[in-house]
Image (cartoon, rainbow over the protein chains, first blue to last red):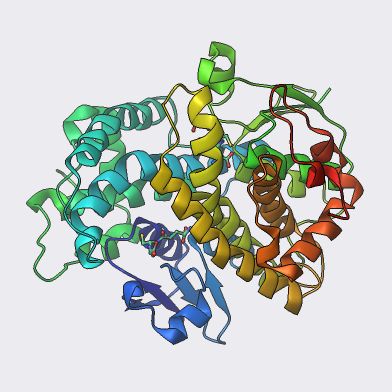
Length: 222
Length: 222
Ligand SMILES: N[C@@H](CCC(=O)N[C@@H](CS)C(=O)NCC(=O)O)C(=O)O
Ligand SMILES: N[C@@H](CCC(=O)N[C@@H](CS)C(=O)NCC(=O)O)C(=O)O
């Protein structure tokens, strides 16, 4: 069976889970405690990060960027990158925005500080980083809201990987109760639409032992 | 004329300059002091980062990931991402490695601390970050050396954007004299081959006023 090595709260793994599910490509999840640096996993991905996708025939793809582009090339039904060059440029600009800018300015300051640091034994959350994360969230929620108000989906008239990249970051943060949905009603409405898609079911069913999500986490009408 | 908004030491801009030159796509460079947040530039790229590419007809593409994928789709001669799905996955894995892992572990700790921080008025270089940068450079030079010893080019038998992504990071650091070439002879030999390609000429001719590169910077037989 096709296998995705992941951890539940990894936003990059969530982006790939959404892309696979939206394309209706069956897969199995396997948790990889990447911080243990398992030799067989290092051989699959020298960067030792999740996600890593392994196809049934053994073909392995490391890195969520490489995986998502691969999925659209190998399984072209339900294209997630847009059709025209202009659409594709906009989808990818926004993927980079969420994967790197949103991640560095928001997700890292909250999710990494509060959860991952503990897993990795790197000490306590840094209060200044957390303040910066909450502060930066304002601009980002407004930006998502602006996009959502002016377009059917974040990158244009069709749903695309830009929506999944954004939803992946937000859903990881939402699991730990750290998204201030009141910051933008259009962003919240867009996310409610995302949550009610069948591809989202797997994410909403995630439960990490010892860390319960807030009640609204899996409720599409939150 | 096609225009690339850039700053000379930006590794992401250098990656795009190399890709354009390798594909023999003519372009003009325009320096963008992104820290001034010029309104017309913000309208082209809300992230306010360089590089941004503007085609002659006004079509604008922000973000080096979106630009490079666009170039390969719009100008398919001299493909830079490999042909088979397997080659393409490997090229993209390595692009992510150099754009994000190498950048975060090495380039940022040296180039940002020593140069960009001053431009942005964010204070003095952080000594601990610089130490980490030099320390991390060892692993990275060894990894490049390993790839270069086992393959014709970093991602396989053909030159690809993986080579340009790596060379872009290294050439920015080399300009400020911060690459320890003695760490890996195969990495140095690979870089000498890169430097002697016609596409590299533009980078080697860069001169920033008040900041001279070391003598070996533009010498292919360094
Ligand atoms: N560029 C990688 C980044 C993946 C990433 O950073 N994953 C995190 C978990 S969300 C990880 O594995 N971190 C381990 C580490 O940085 O050592 C991708 O897009 O797949
Ligand atoms: N994801 C962007 C990153 C570009 C980037 O970080 N560029 C730097 C210069 S090398 C920049 O413009 N930084 C401005 C900032 O971060 O505010 C890309 O690949 O184009």
